[in-house]
Image (cartoon, rainbow, N blue to C red; front, side):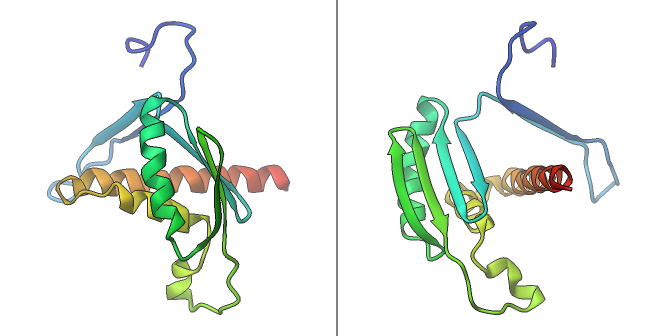
Length: 149
């Protein structure tokens, strides 16, 4: 990474890599990015989507339109020209284990954003990004849990 970024420069981004390989089933891959257009945050039932640059402003409009009609989103408002904030519904319904991912949660927001940008021709990229996004969110949640203990 040092050859791509000047020394001492701090930028937002991530680099994910898998060196696991199994012929005919798994291949090695690397996926990375710098200067992402958006930041998605959440805590409890509240979430925020922030545009981090001009590319993010364009995407924020599409995300607002998608989340505004989502059944699990109860409130959604622009708090500035660069930020959306909202809340996710609380469910009183009891879900079976195999259906629990269908209950309202912050992952409802994540899935809605992922589905908005899904393209059939890029299914492999979408699946990898989705899996990495889930791993990243899970690791953040795990880190917060450890900090709370």
